[in-house]
Length: 187
View 1 (cartoon, rainbow, N blue to C red):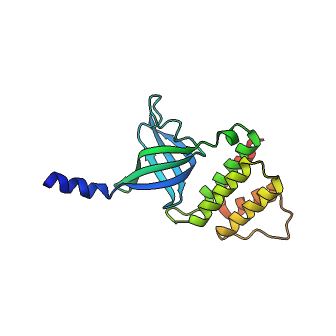
View 2: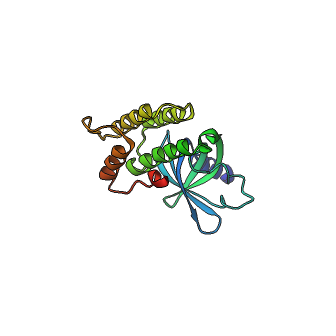
View 3: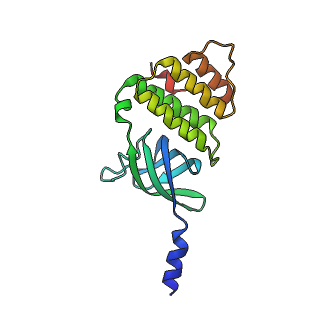
């Protein structure tokens, strides 16, 4: 009877989410530290033990800019990934240099401006729409307008008097985040 009670109390600890991997860092020898923007929980910092081992099934699933479904749990204020399933690797976008750069710019905006743990379902859904626009080859001006709309959803108003370009958007983001935008330095 006691074992059954313990199992049921543990069942509630696991949480499920769908998210976009914004950034990953190697931690120790085979572990990874991930920044994931989820629909259900907002931006999260997650730890994936053993994910960087060559024999790990999660190695390709936990790549930057992947859309994933994940199960995770919390222990001592650290979130650990239990399992992750790949929903989309966005491979057609990642193989094109300009499209990948646009994706990295989106990831950097979300990483720098989203607070940890704030649920932003509209922002998540709109970010997915931007991914579709990038995949379908939407023209540059429409993408820039989408980024301005995303910034407005996050509470930042882009000066409408300024000419909309990648460089003005970059300097605007650097001013509000007080951090350098590195995704656009790839030229």
